[in-house]
Amino acid sequence: MRKIGNFTLGLVLGSFVSYQIVKYFEPPKKQKTDKFKSYYNMLTRWLELEDNNLAIDKLFKQYGYNKIAIYGMGKIGMRLCNQLRNTDIEIAYVIDQYAKNVLDNICFKDPQDKLDEVDAVIVTIPFAYFEIKNQLTMKLECPIVSLEHILFEV
Image 1: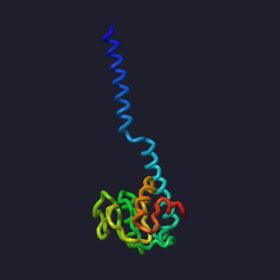
Image 2: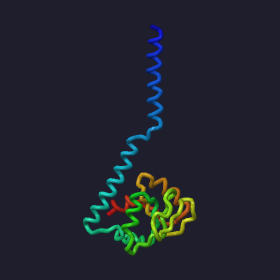
Image 3: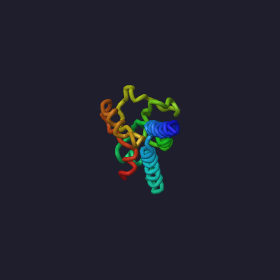
Image 4: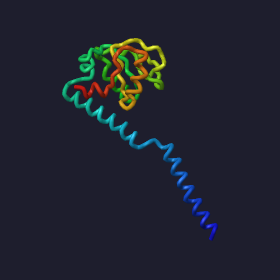
């Protein structure tokens, strides 16, 4: 009888400890949900503006951003670069610590590199904007703005 009690106690304790370990290492689902929700909202707004003939390059021109740097070369950053090709907006360089030379004729820089002054740095990662802004503010004097902010400001 004592063996069954010890086995049951071990099973319960083992299950509890296993649950706590998995819970500790699993990223919070709310963070993932918020991340994808911000991307979804941003892309939806971008499409709405384009449906109303307000292209992204026109928005940048309204702010006086003719020569920019783009921070983040994930899918949003790549989409922004593609949208700005064949426009008057000059992409001086892109900043990304992981992607290297994924686009022709665009200079890639690591966030730790010396960064040249531009009219603005456009941050394409909405959930990390404030962290990125704080990091770059020490290196640059130009505005560091979120693409999300630009899209919803209109």
